[in-house]
Image (cartoon, rainbow, N blue to C red; front, top):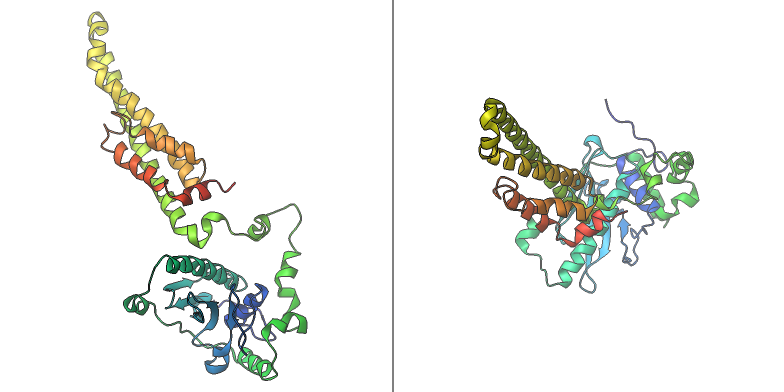
Length: 336
């Protein structure tokens, strides 16, 4: 069943219209008719006038060199409101799908700004984009916008009106504005994530931290599996020790109990110590909480004869400790 998209600008109910409206609501200036691009970026709707938005709406940012401009093409793919964002100059290629139409623009702008800032730092450190690298980023091409939007945009720009005038001129549908929808949040409930987080995305979900956070969660799963195996070894060792005790005669049990059960008991103690530490550390790693506790639990595997006599504990513990040396770990785990 096709998704019904509510009108965004005038009678236009396409994803292009919601992208333009979202950029305006995010505070981006409109440079379609000219003007300088500020540090925070601007949008350009000239492709709506030229080819009905097939080559995407443009997000423009100042480049690294004086007079340079980096342009991100935001094209609508059509399926499930999918959007592709491409920029060869900054090696950016990202696709979005499944987001509400009124949230796509804000998410795209957030990711592009974060990438742009990181790319500027990379260029300042001496980074250069090769021709081969830029060719790996495809063109931002998609479907056409609705005729309602194309005709509306053309009329307004011919009259030298910019889209940033939309809220003041009543081009928006007030009932669908972010301000109107935000007013519907019940005070004290806090179920809406934007309301709860004061319009800020969680640190671990920000573009510059997202991949690192996902790798830590994966590593936490590995710790859980390793800890489970350690507890299994401890259980088997305890069973073996119990069997040895009950199979011996009473007159020799005291003399031979320690000799027969020494290694099973050591395996039981080591496996229990290792298993509990790895399970606890894995749980906190996946929750991205308690950085020092995770480090201590990982270090347990470095102890002698813990974690199958270093065969598992040392490589896993070393891997975890190495990953947590990244400066991003302190930010993610200490997000409060």
